[in-house]
Length: 325
Image 1 (cartoon, helix red, strand yellow):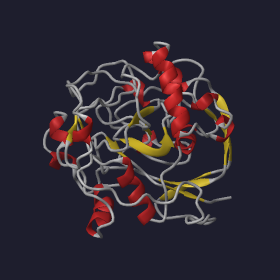
Image 2: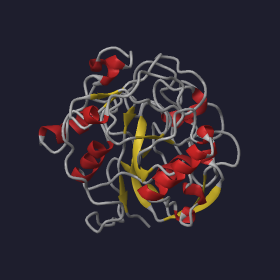
Image 3: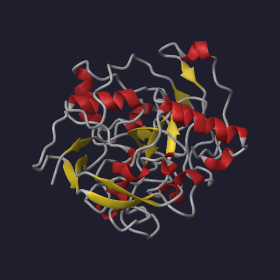
């Protein structure tokens, strides 16, 4: 986790267990640079119970497809370079080859309009209306335009929406392949530094999805850098790239991740995951940077993480689906 602020102490465990209570736990960042917009980041706990979790990635409940899918773009099968050998944080190292099956990924982040249809059906919890103001970005209404990316929701809510659509969350490796392609590019568009024409970053509010075509990734996906951080399926494992399953994009289990985090704490390696305290619970990965984020943190190898219950105005998602040649 890459944090650039410190905030008030967390509420007690009992308070966190109650739906609707706030958690003053810290947020992520992706670089040591200060944010341009907010002096502190406040994470909200879930405000409604999450629906039952959908099937895990690869489940038979989501059948493979081999034809084009509206609103999605194919990421072809084959190898790519995941991670980096230098720069960023140690949890991004080392660079290694990962081979994946073909899959489809939403061209854009899921919008407020699309997500609200699931809320109306009673299958997805509503977004948390408090996060924007708590994080000094103004009223929640600034983030609720129909074509802005949905945000202020937790990992379970993202999974529930994807399942309702007959899809799933992408894995961390799938997300990075969609952003980096076969040429190990630093950003979705290549190795040139971010510019306002390529994405929404270093600002105070999200933009409509798909509004920066010059920032498209190698397979045509948009907004993979900036706008909102995107939840992915994986448990955050700081040693994922050192595991036996690394060549398949597979990190450790929750128990293995907790063991790795405990090892980092005992060795005094706080900076291994960035400047935040090393987690004491299993968290989930988010990728891609956000509207308030400095340019260096938009690199496609950047790994951040939060407890799935966190509802942050900086965090949204897009969905994936198995299939393709």
